[in-house]
Length: 95
View 1 (cartoon, rainbow, N blue to C red):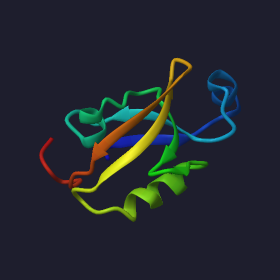
View 2 (spheres, rainbow, N blue to C red; view 1 turned 90 degrees about the vertical axis):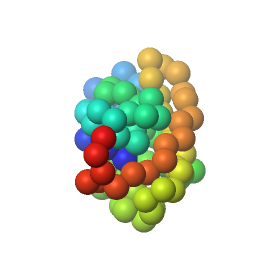
View 3 (spheres, one colour; view 1 turned 180 degrees about the vertical axis):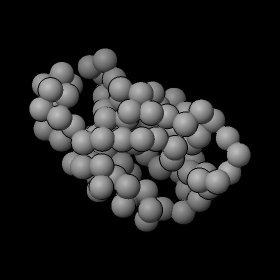
View 4 (cartoon, one colour; view 1 turned 45 degrees about the vertical axis):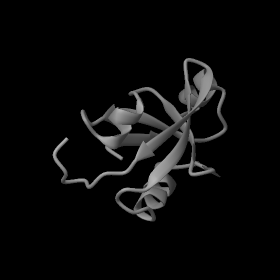
């Protein structure tokens, strides 16, 4: 996917109005996440229809997918919920 993520802190939960999720800290330029429009600071609340509670859970969900799969990701950005689709790429693929 091409992101660095961390678990939602108490401060993040209050700021985004979330119970759980992960925060995108970094997006690799040219990665699947970048091409899909995911930005640092986005809160990911769902991956392929399943709620995201921890970064470990999201990473496992990504590992269960295949290169070329299109995944659906729900994010919260500036208080607005958005649904984004991203086509997964190889980690070593040139971005």
